[in-house]
Amino acid sequence: MRTVHVAVAAPAPPPALTGAAKTLDDAEHAFSDRKAAAAKELFLRSLQETDLNPMHAKAYYGLARVALLENDPDTAERLFRKVLELDPDPGVKSWSLLYLGRLSDNTQGGREQAKEFYKSALAVEGGSDQVRQLAEQGLNQAFTNKK
Image (cartoon, rainbow, N blue to C red; front, side):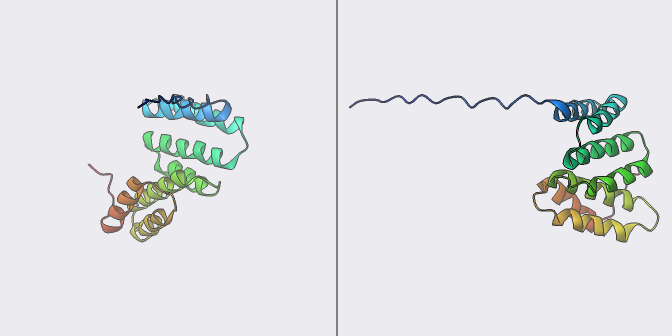
């Protein structure tokens, strides 16, 4: 009986990010580190580095979250709405709709609109399980940001 050893090549590393993709990645890292000013600058720079709508959607999504971090819900809402105009990928679209639902839940008389945003988030093909779970929670109970 012979033993045959088959060499398995290690998977190639992903290609290095360049241009706007690298800038967006750097911006996300700055945002994760709660460095709002640096993240904002990088998201804005990425808008200058590409004219692709899905990448612009990611940049505006990042800027909207920075606005939330800076306690500016009006700007955040405007930017999340802008995201939806720019052919966002399913993840960015579903999260933007979820955030819009939460923002609506935090405005006087916005509960019905919030439910529509949550339903829209659930309808996005390819949205994450986390968004689905949070949107279902939002349909069942109003989101409140009050402590």
